Amino acid sequence: MPTRSARKNAVEPPSIETLRARIDEINLKLLSLLSLRANLVTEIGHLKGASAEAVYQPARERDVLEKMVAENAGPLGADAIRTIFTEIISACRALEHPLRVAYLGPEHTYTHEAARGRFGANVEYSPQSSIAGVFQASESGRSDLGVVPVENSTEGSVPLTLDLLIDTPLVIVGEILLPVRHALLSLTGDAGAIRRIFSHQQSLAQCRGYLSANFPHCDLEAVASNAFAAQRAAEDPSTAAIASVAAAEAYGLKIIAENIQDLAANATRFLVMGKRPAERSGADKTTVLFAVAHRAGTLYEALGLFARNGINISKIESRPLRSRPWEYLFFVDLGGHRDDPKLKRALQALGRKALFLKVLGSYPEGKPAAV
Image (cartoon, rainbow, N blue to C red):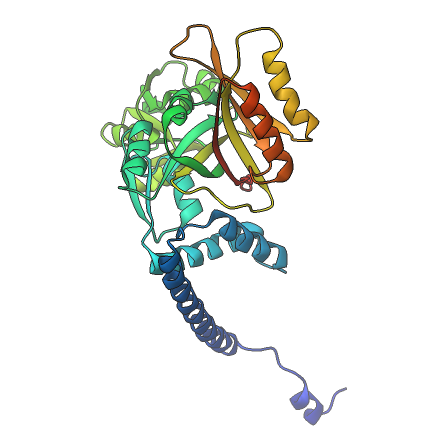
């Protein structure tokens, strides 16, 4: 049996007060390090101002986030680390220049959620009523960047975004892949009281199986955005909205059901548009637009240029050539940056064969967020 002195000398577990005191010490160290980081960013901002370098550096920011995730030993998960450092980057970036980001609004749409996830809270967000409005705000200089939806994994591409890419002077500087998790919301949360359901037409399509099985008696009405649907649901207890969970809190709604999309892997891809091309990150994607002569084998020959140079094609889509009926423009997503030697060589060869070629942008390839 241990003696009294031995029991005294035994290591006692730390108390809550002791642990909290250590946390307070660490908080002060974190604050000091954040201030040091902010001062360094301010110095970089002065140097950028002298060289007219862009404030937003997508390749650099991706590198920082990926390095922090790779070095993370836990217990915080990768998504938590990305979120923390996204906000640190956002706050420090604002010391250089308050970034202005236009997006397809209103607030609490999925485009807003995608923009907030990419750029953090320390940004001047500017909701626009249309995709064209986002392009106009960025082209005119009223915003530094624009965020627009371009493709959904179940419903396909957004035609208006593709059409606007044809003539815009903007370039793609980033992409955001956002899992889309639909919820059914109403003022009271009473499913039995629902007679009409509002949502964007794509969201209605993505939930058609759930709605058919659970609300076959309800009228479905497409509106401009899921946020607008939430506004309508907040006005009438007999109506519901399909929107994000974040919209429930914003509009004072209750959640009837979550994750009502028919496919669990439902995700939307967004483009970040800007005026300055993005530098190489080492894990890039390039989007090009081209047209070829309307005769047999020309498209095959054009695409063969990428195969011969070892360039992966991840997507190809056609759009009508407005000035020439029944002829088409082709949007192609390619692996690599336009400055990579192989891709540069392939694009030069395509430029000699194509009737028209436009490189829409090279940018860091987006990574799907955790489901």
